[in-house]
Length: 258
Image 1 (cartoon, rainbow, N blue to C red):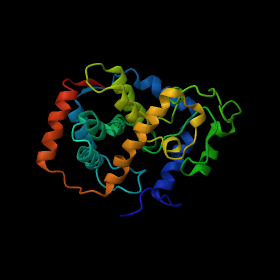
Image 2: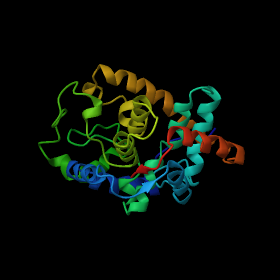
Image 3: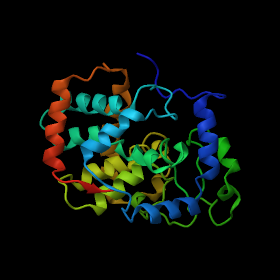
Image 4: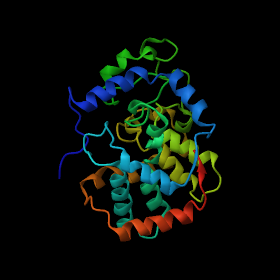
C-alpha cells in the first residue's frame, strides 16, 4: 500500500497551499459564507452534482489523479462493506465531496479544496505547509493571532470559522435545504472531514464542547474510508452506480437549491 498524504516541497500541492494560505483570510471566509448562504446559483439534483465531479481532479491531493467522482464511489463502497445497513453513512461517503462543484461557479481551486483550518485565531503548526501561512495578512493581525483569537475556550468547534471550500459549502446546502432526509450527524461529518489539524493533528481541542466529542468520533471513523479507499479498485460498475442512484432518490427525492 502506498503511503498516503505525503506532502513535499516544490510540488503542485505545495504551490497550491501557498496560494490558499495567502488568501484564505477571515474577511474572505465571511464574504463567501454571506455569498453562498443565499443559495441562488442554481437548482440541481444530487445526481447532477455527482456527475459534475467527472470533470474535476483535486489539485491539492497528492494521492489522486482521477476525476473526483471515482473517489466518492470508492469511499461509499468501502463504507458499504463495513456498514451494509447504514444507508446514511453510505450516502455520506458518496456525497461528501460534492461541494467541489464550486469550481463550476468560478471559484479558484484554493477556495474549493484542501485541508481546512480555522480563521480568526492563531494558526497551529499541524496545518499542512504551516510556514506559508506567514504570507496571510491575518498572521500578523493582533486581533487574530492569539490562541483563542475572536473566539473563547470551549465555544464549540461548530462555532469556529474555517477556511472556505467544499466542506462548508455542502454543509450550507444541506442545512438550508429542508427537502432531504440526511440527518445532522452526517451533515457534521461532511462539514469537518477536511479539518485535519483538528481530527488528525489533535489541535484546537480547546475550542471543543461536549457535543464536539461525538462529532470528532464520527469524523475519525469516516476518515478511515475517505482516506484509505483511494487504494481501492477505480472501476465503478453499472450495478454499483444503479445502487447509489436509487439511494440518492431515497435521501434526496427533489432538486436542491445550490
